[in-house]
Amino acid sequence: MTGKDVREAIISILVDIAPDEDVSSINDQDNLRDQIDLDSMDFLDIVMELRKRFNIEVPEKDYGQLATMASCVTYLEPLLKDRQLAG
Image (cartoon, rainbow, N blue to C red; front, side):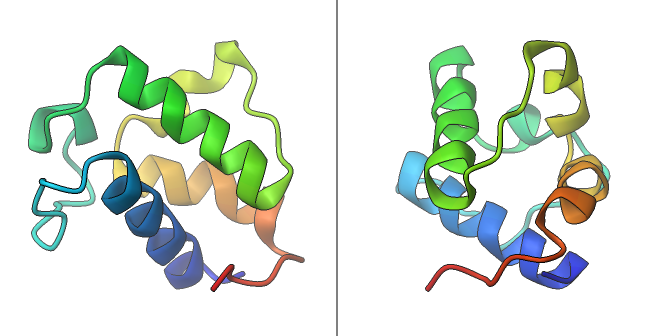
């Protein structure tokens, strides 16, 4: 997966987790939780969805790496580089 693919996958997960939120205007540098209404349970749902869709584990110590879209892509791209975008 490319960085663009990783971003699309994250957007897809966000749409599933928070279907009423507008994810089209996400600024990649700003905190995701500040941009869309995500609580701590929603965040854990995102981590669980990453595990389910891509069979990757995000250790709790790395949760901070998922704060912004840009940091998500930076963190996840190497882990997903050999994966295909889930349709």
